[in-house]
Image 1 (cartoon, rainbow, N blue to C red):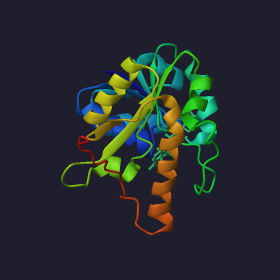
Image 2 (image 1 turned 90 degrees about the vertical axis):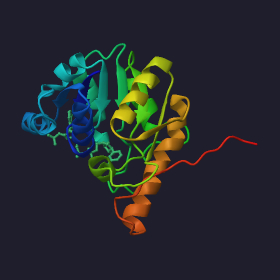
Image 3 (image 1 turned 60 degrees about the vertical axis):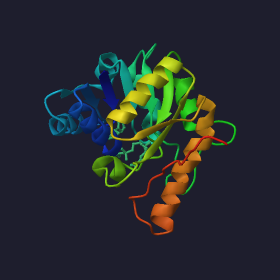
Length: 211
Ligand SMILES: NC(=O)c1ccc[n+]([C@@H]2O[C@H](COP(=O)([O-])OP(=O)(O)OC[C@H]3O[C@@H](n4cnc5c(N)ncnc54)[C@H](OP(=O)(O)O)[C@@H]3O)[C@@H](O)[C@H]2O)c1
């Protein structure tokens, strides 16, 4: 898959490295072009850097991984995202990270869908801390990554990219379920930084067929 990554920080940089390692072609964009260039260098020979508009045009799938305060500008700079699989992990966190700015009646992912009209938005990776993405440190059955969206084909692309990043995908339904998945990120933040568990915390969904 050709993947444009808007936001080459902890999330975008880490996921881009996994995807490049699986042979996907990557183009990184960041606020500072030097940061996008550094992420491309770290990801290897299938990765390059460009402007936000170039990364958006390049990708069949586009990852949006910018701070919430930059989401509107980044989507505007991207230009047309019509038809693109737009995987969002950007979270509507309050400046102190201790609460969500959107919830119950909307979600960050639904707000991104409003900004990026023709894109096929999928929320994914928001429940996986960057530290976990960077190092895959868990033994055994692996880490669950929940995803939700309204377009079946776009969700299929996201599912493949979740697997290629080393995680177990869990289909969490329609995009509106972002209202449920985004608070799970806030719970992780509370566990990690208020309860003192540290940033290597992750979800694993257990499931067996009903009897
Ligand atoms: N870190 C986590 O564990 C985690 C987990 C789940 C969800 N998230 C969410 O994922 C998003 C990214 O988090 P992160 O930790 O990766 O942040 P980060 O390390 O600060 O990286 C943010 C990236 O976005 C770029 N950026 C900022 N404004 C931009 C703009 N207007 N246009 C294009 N690129 C822009 C930055 O570029 P410059 O630095 O060059 O300006 C940087 O490369 C956030 O919304 C966060 O809430 C993070």
